Image (cartoon, rainbow, N blue to C red; front, side, top):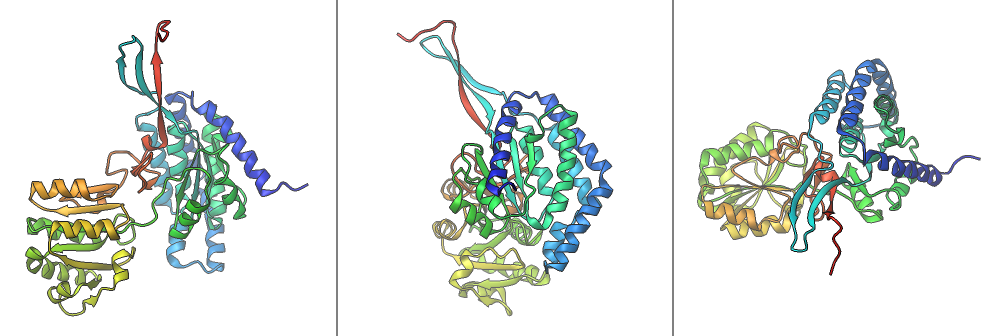
Length: 421
């Protein structure tokens, strides 16, 4: 009898839970050996990876995938190099597991502290980019977590070829094969099963479009680490240094248009707008950015500037489009960000210590910046080494989620026969 999708996913979940018990006690050296061996296996499997990826690309073209999706799907030699280097980078990162902090004696004589431990089993649901298979597997493994990876159906052959390399790495280090499992069915029911197994899965991390993340957030029966939108702001304060303001506002929008930490709305204090907006308008037009602005901004940005609609303030464009608004105060800027933003990343450009402190305290986002581009909101730039995603939630993890974000803490107590009186 053919195994049902639910039975298959239950089998994967049970195996992952058992593997997580092994990983919880695995040494740093053993985890690093698995990562290094997987990197070597990827290097040796370049032709097999290219052949598998060619199958996916051919199927994608036949199925009508657009050029942007095909580009994300492609495993170029450079991307294979990046995956190999990514594994080696994670191997070099400090291992957070087992670290004990805040040990202190209590009046009773016991010692109490906190130990960092893995979450257990992490389910990851993602679309198109096969390199996510390596990113996710390496971070979960280094942080002592078993993982179940469910990639998009469009990348099934690529993901399976990558999974074979990971399995070689696990075997080389003597770790269970179920430490990293790639779901082999393309049936969408597999996602529904994965996100509804709290007995086997401790957390879900979705990586993909808004519709995927909304579906998982709505249907999951286990906690989800996620962000839905990247509606990021730069606010140019009345006390801004103009050169800094132009440099930051340019980079935050035009360094790359698609990432979730790219600025989508520029806010400018009325007192500096006449000096800041005309040069920025020229820069944006020269770089092909469409401007959608409030009436006061349109006057200063010049011809070709479109009128912003109410919907523009809450839109993540992921494209060369920018909303611009003039505000009369820091209060108005903060209110706008907290109303229309997505709690991802927001920046102020100012030389006023007081305004900077207020912005940091009152803007309700996972990353808040002073005199720096929003494009810095990234695990690598924050010194995490790598990230599995960005969280705009407030519980457990917030901002870029690296190794520490894939762990928890437990209280540990040391006594010497102590009893409570």
